[in-house]
Image 1 (cartoon, one colour):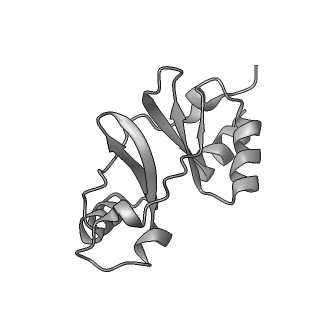
Image 2 (cartoon, one colour):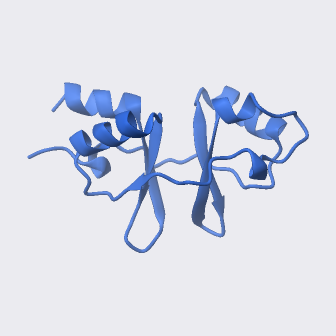
Length: 120
């Protein structure tokens, strides 16, 4: 059986809010050795902030104006091969995994996809 998002996603999510500053987010990314994370308000993903976004701003600025608000997401049952196609077509490094109810349940990075394909 083909692997899906739920098989490879990270569920121990590191998130932030849109009121966080660039400096705060930079520290979280560096401390956790990650390149991006979901921006969440009241349990709903409203965007993604990445290293590339951070490079465009100053330390005390809030991230609400630099985050990517076009959230690219998949469902938990999305096949890994489809996720790979989305990452490539959208030129992105991660997709959020969102249930039908709208709940953020995970994140899938390019590294997760490659590991999922390698050990299928």
